[in-house]
Image (cartoon, rainbow, N blue to C red; front, side):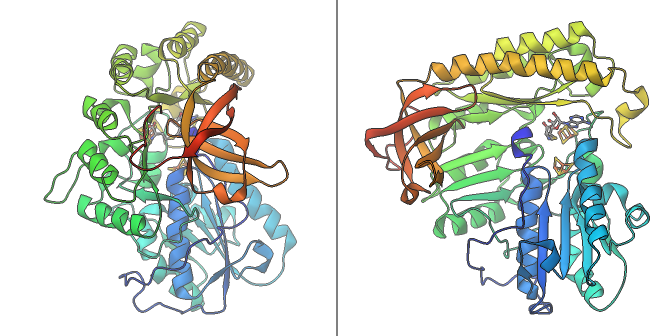
Length: 481
Ligand code: SAH
Ligand code: SF4
Ligand code: F3S
């Protein structure tokens, strides 16, 4: 999803002490690289961001220390994204710039989706690269690192037949109050424009027993928000004897003592059930926000995209969400200019935006990708026309968002305070329905849940002030959200 297209710059910053729990990943490798340094830069979605947290954990356990500047690192890793051409290009421009600077000998590794996609060919395009490893092979990272440390020039981890998820208790989480937890890896859908099934492999769900144990540990460590992750998170199928459905899993996490917010991303419309809405309705700690990518409002385009639902079926799911007792906000992803998209198709996407009333839309110009089904159909919509459609769509959505945000003025919302800007004396929080609120505040509010009265609205965020009685307890949670 668009919201998760973040970039961590410079390197992962450490905010938690290292878990001391034993893990099979560590055996025989602890401290092997003592005194060495690493730089890790991440592109792409939340799945990649969280993978980097896991990789950083493995590295720290081997004795590596994180640094913020690649020039100071013995090991440089780029965790890459291949979703669109521009995203994939980033790693090559980083490698190019780095090569020009020259300098001392070091290990350079490429992880993630471009690594998986390019495979061995990466070494030809970028000869300075020593390691190419896709996400389905991260459990082999300690062994691969060992080979590199003992002098081997080129190593790869490219197998996609992993039958389980990459799990480690060494994860170095980047945020002190929000913890990502992978519940399902890979993707079994076959959208004709998308590289993810090739780059992340087939769907693998983690046993619910392990997920719940991890969430319990995170709650004990003080994390109050849990974000469950998967490319198609709601396609989750519990392989453990409990056989929890996705909505049952949500409820079990939401009921865990200490957990105040649960988010999940990304949901696929095909597997989106009324039980998910019922769970949100009955459990205030399940955030009232659903990211439900639609991609297009035209049935003809949806069919060619192989999205497995029609506009009408999608709108039925939206109706179910709108009929909930809680006001659940909905966001989406849209691709404009997919091959064969006519002006009429595009107008149907605009009318869908009116029908749904999204609170946020992440929109992208179609980018043909290697080895996808749509590649052979060409790229019929010219770049300038794609640009025009994107602009029209974004302007249309800005107006919708502004109206929706203006309707929030005068109301009170609970926010989790996520940051503070000393220069402005402003704190920034997020409502459970995922709206950003700026308000006058102090740095000691960060990580706390407080009630805010909204006093103004823009298209992308709200402004407010602390409400008269601002601290919110877990028991009061959810009211007015
Ligand atoms: N698994 C999620 C989305 C993953 S990719 C889902 O199915 O909804 C995030 C978003 O990138 C997609 O929702 C889509 O809008 C966009 N995207 C994927 N492939 C693309 C391509 N080839 N060109 C442009 N945008 C693309
Ligand atoms: Fe890509 Fe479709 Fe899978 Fe999402 S559901 S990751 S868009 S193939
Ligand atoms: Fe994520 Fe990009 Fe891979 S969106 S799954 S990092 S292609």
